[in-house]
Picture 1 (tube, chains in turn cyan, orange):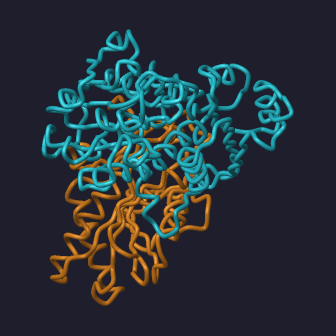
Picture 2: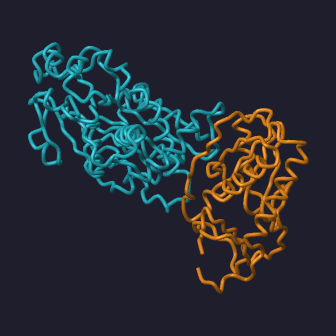
Picture 3: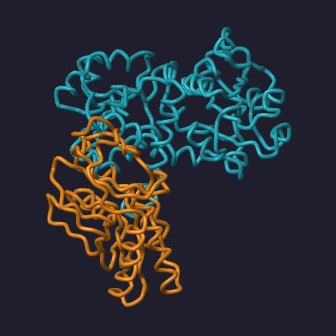
Length: 308
Length: 192
């Protein structure tokens, strides 16, 4: 099996067997992070560049740790204090990095489609670390890995995604991948944050939280971006929290062993109460740990073997 | 894979079993028992051989021997030269290696590069007291200064041939054969 892609840009066009293979490879990398010497020599001499045009702690650090545990050289570029602030275009920045023989560029950008644009202009591998409101494939893959790790298999599981669906690239990537794997997906949020055509993706849309979370196996809560209130899409954080915030009382509507997920960072007390985030069915920290293993797997598949 | 590919049978089921029994006794003899001995199997067939050795040693000495699995894919020196990604499996060594007498177990010793990779992998996991190597077949043609401590059978071969070990856990039969074609860079392990 040769990994058939040059880039990881989204989950929308991944088929079930490809997703399963990626998750299988991730298994092998979970163990590396439990060793005392958390390093394998596989990507020694490879150069990985994290090109982040938006702030990030989790994703960027996760990619950095993943690259370093594979013995690669990892460079982090955040755009303030770089030539981007001087007006350098995305294409020029990327071609400059490619000319320095980067092997992988991980890019996060506020414009949907930016990684795809980049991938067409550089010979090295491009990984989408989140583009606008479009996709965040590595988050979705690590979410699926975490669910599979806890539940054993994915087909037929029922998931409720709660929050600002309209602006969430995490929701989109998860929806694409989960539907491909035969999972039952519900989305829930205020009508102002649910895209009109969302059910065309094969999901059921709800505006009532209690109904949405009844009988689901997993509740995935999205971060409410505080700017939404400023744009008038929700009347106030307090109202959002009362109607859509997940707390212990609300969870009484759901199955007693329902699993709780959140991509982070959490607005404590807004979309999720701290007791829920830290409860025994919360997978939030597993998601973080698995994120490193998943990103190691992708870096290995893209840069660790024979070139295309 | 055609039956004409088989040039010669080197070991049949009883021969494999006798060789493993002898190796088990040799391990116990040299270690003067099995105190601190651990067996680590490499890749797929090394695991089955290690398990059988652990079983035999337990029957000889009356004590269980810890058993681990190492996957060397991440330590290989030929990842860029292959035609495919070799299948990555898990390393599972749920005990400390520090101060232990590690016996690495593999089916065929050839260039020695697999063993070099396994040594690097083990060193990242701890500081063993010693590492020894047990193989079912040594077919010669070393490219690195690596040698086995325990050998089931020495099988001189040419580079135009390859040696295959088939075990019932993996392949449904027990046989060691010489095949009429060289090792390839990237086929998955064939079954008969």
